[in-house]
Length: 278
Image (cartoon, rainbow, N blue to C red):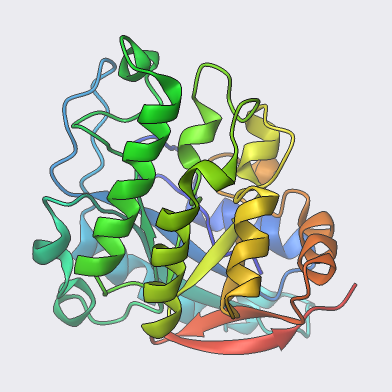
């Protein structure tokens, strides 16, 4: 099941929710989790995009759709039931950790929350302007330091999204990335996450955005496994129908190669471990 998907409820997406579900069903999926963007206090962007989720309407709509997905009319001749899970990709930064810590208790009905870092020093690295006048290595370090701050002060999430998101957009991408340059940060991040019962995601969205690897980078995934990390989800980060379930068989092989035997699904913010079948 794809556990990182965007629809028209996200500021940067126009995909229809029901069309997304049908695309997933055509791929043989029996479940997906919609995870639209909610980025509180997102700074003004050069292209004017905002990421404030209309959370109550979003959850209400998906709850209705959840029931519809169980109906014979929706399933047509398909005897396999389809389970829709309700999630959010929570854009978190040091200034919003405290405000967002009660999000799931304030909005009942959520199955899953991805915590993601999209903003560093009041700008999304997606915009090339972020790197102007910065040393790439220093910019990467600041990004990872913010993740450490977030996992230390924010706990209302299940997995951390695209841990090395910044590598998508750096001037040299991952060409000069060496995880050992940031080892003490990653070790502290994973120690805290594992202690808190949190996990990470394999995000295949980097592959159709020009990178040669899935998030997170091999070195980061290896460290997570070596430190005892077990909770892991797989998500395409799709904003368009053609990217739903992108390279998932490769993602499954990658997990097995790194020693993972299970991936996770979530219901009511609690994980279920599912064997990885190749």
